[in-house]
Length: 261
Length: 231
Length: 50
Image 1: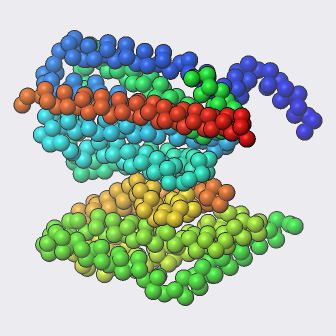
Image 2 (image 1 turned 120 degrees about the vertical axis):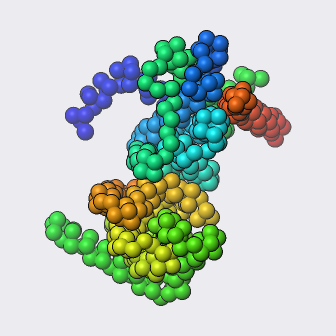
Image 3 (image 1 turned 135 degrees about the vertical axis):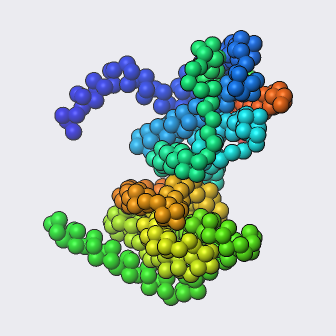
């Protein structure tokens, strides 16, 4: 034990480690993230405005898909985001289970509803894109099917978290489920993809074939970055509310409420 | 205590646990039959709902039998840890110092013997009912032999997570069905490939890989889940 | 086929879902802050005249 102490004090002095330790404190986390959220919303709105303008007025209509491909500027960023939200949730769940940091537990649990919302958007936009493209609202296409399974995984995590009354126990159980889901997610993804080719499913490439005009890609990139800022702002807002709710009787919450008045 | 004694006591604890659970299960024989009857009822509903056309039934038979196996497994899963959790036996096990992983593995094995094996044994009957294509019977049985233990293993994680809930059974199906998707796909693909006289051994290989992976990982995850539920 | 309703529909539903996801925690926060404020009030009243 005595050998380890100098090492530990050295770690304490490291500003990055110190900062991470501080972020683990609910009060510090609450105040620190509060500064970022307005900026995140602002960046999201500006980028969305740029992306939407380009997607609707600058990009020419696709000669194969006509106008309907403009839905993809919503569908594709939402699909990427839904997957990234799951990955972030799983990483947070892993950290939360090992180091038992409450703030990270809350981050993992608040990532689930946002990710689920994005899977819903992906599915709705995907099937509304499919109607003009495939002639039907739903096709058991590999992408849509694995997105649907992803939604079920999210709903499982949210359901388990809400079903257990004691918040920390609920978070730990749901975190474990999120991790199990994360181990399974690649297997599900590849098995669904492969199931689809096996049954000769129709799969149309999203962005009209091999030669994609760069003017079509730019708004996609802008939109997918915008969506990340939305996610960040939403995740932090939810986490802060959850902290307030859980720390109802703690001094730092009382101070915030008193100052707010 | 030497390592040899430790492993010996672990093995005897494991065997004792499996024996005890099997004995308990066979004392409540009617309860044991519920999932099996459920399996038969679910499969028999398909011809009633779809129509008795033998060609149609033959085409959907691998999927139907497998989905029925999935449903029946989930029905029986709830009893996996339930009684031991409620009467405090599980906590006693933990206090006794035996690793929870070992207990979970013993419970999973018992569950498979009680709920998985009957599915395998009944599958010939189901195959006749559903007019499973000729020559695929063997593959069907092999996929069930390899697949149903995976269902028990993954299901145990879900049970461990929901055990402290009064009505965990409803949530359990939501938790485990998405995780069962790959097994369903691979197992039915193997049977369908055999029906079209295509090579199917690679699918069986995937199932074996899945079985080994879940056998090494799932007991630990189930033990972790139980530990959270017991806390 | 006219694609406009599908484009408008998907963006409208997307906007509604994302808007609701963003607004829901704010509504909840308002309720929680109100609850805590009431709690503080009750405690202060109890402290001043026991």
